[in-house]
Length: 213
Image (cartoon, rainbow, N blue to C red):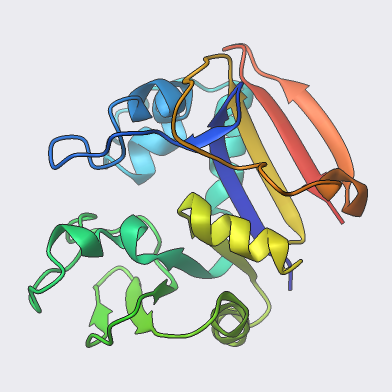
């Protein structure tokens, strides 16, 4: 089944802002990058557990809802799990809390084996010391007839794009210029030639660009 990626990036292609810290583990500009995504009704409900119905319901929300639909397994890096925050604590269960929003098997790429962590809502983190190709193969087997999502971070996504593993790439380009950080597109020359590319502009001004096989 298809392997999917969804990312928020800036006009200058930054997907991971600079200067992460304990107070701002995703970088101090992360909020600027994802503000419109976090404002959607879907994000507020799925990630924050807000069932009040608050949040935007336009184009951005449609893409936010699609992010969670049809996923049978996920692949992510150790940073997205939050492993770097407490690398030596065997009791650390990630920074997603006791209700991670994934609800599917998640394969976390790492250089150190750790016991599997399972949650009541169906999320199960399995830590794998292998290549992105092998991890995607394992995730595809776990997903059955559903899709596999490569959640991030940007280094994992870039590795998957370089290995030509991605069938569907959606980037939400927020009209801000960060100037620093890790860019998605560097050295991915002619990536667009592998895909059919479509665009849609949301009410927020975010440009949603989709690359599909």
